[in-house]
Amino acid sequence: MDIGIMTSLALAFSIPASFFWGYICDRTRRYKRYILLSFFSSAIILFLFTLPFSQNIAMFILLYVVMSVLHVAHEAPKNVLIAEHYSREEWEHSFSFYEGLTEIGWFVGLVLGLFAFSLALSFGVVANYTLYLASGLSLVAFLLSIFLIADPLMIFERRLVGIERKLDYTFRGVETSTRLLDGLPVREKFKAESFFGFGLGLILFSLASSLFFTPLPIFFSQPPLSLPVSLIFVVYMLNSGGAVAGYFFMGRRATSMDAKKRMRRVVLLRSFLVFLLVAVVQFAFSPTLLAGAILVLLGFAYAVYYILMISLSMELIPAGRAGLFDVLVGVGGATGSFFGPFLAQMLGYLPQFLVAGALFFAAFVVLKIFS
Image 1 (cartoon, rainbow, N blue to C red):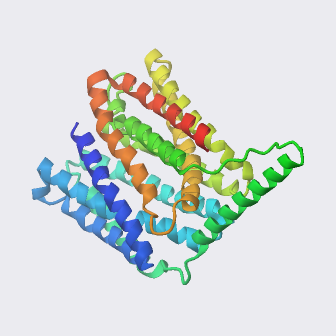
Image 2: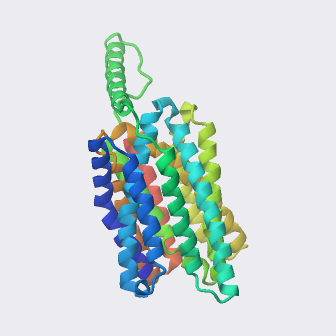
Image 3: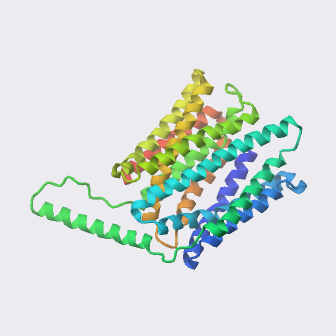
């Protein structure tokens, strides 16, 4: 419950913060400064976690919430930087390359965390050394960003894409009307993108993801899986490895126009995989091995989904509201982070996973209807 409260509070406060950072970076047309703020604040607060006063649970949660609010300062700016530095045809490839690299960093960090935590237990050393390592790496990210990140000279790509979408929609409308008036058959579906459907599907997917993943480490440490605490890092490493493969798969398939049509199928696949995990654990058929394989596939499916959704968000969300994507993700994430541990404690882990699977399916239905 403490983990759920901490995570949900952090995401809840990050929701208005995401909107603010997205608004202020577009308003000032300065993006680099907010990325620097995010990385530097993470380095400082991760170091503060090692000090004695942060051992109080309330103070620890407070610091975590503050770090989360400042950490999201880089999300909207980095999305805008990618969108403005590259043409629309390169967005999927660019986002895939970026997310693939950061996921590799996440994976390597988990490996380092596994060894640092294991060494701390073996030699009876406090686990603060893991936090020192994380703080130092955040500081390195801050220093590198000073030299390697640059604000765009001109900001027009997202507006240009918005104009192109309106012109394309108008052209298809005139073409469809002309064919109908001439008595010709109309095979193409004429439907505008629905921001409501996009937003609702995004919230449901985020809700299901956090509902599933927030209590997952505790679930893996209990029977029938009963993994040692030090091996919980491996749970995330498997999921992260699948995501790395998914991001680079999307990078290679970025120019394939049928890739977007697979987004709904990927959401449906994620629902199926959650139900499959419940079945595997329930019937205890090689649960640890199969659960690991399912985590890899869950990570792969998420990567494909995320690239398609973030590219679509850059098309649908106007300039000045770049943080709205993170707001929608945060709404679902904060709700799921609180209710995930709560449902697990009240109903048990497997029924709670079934709820998450049902919500993934609901996200598939919404995207099927509105997109």
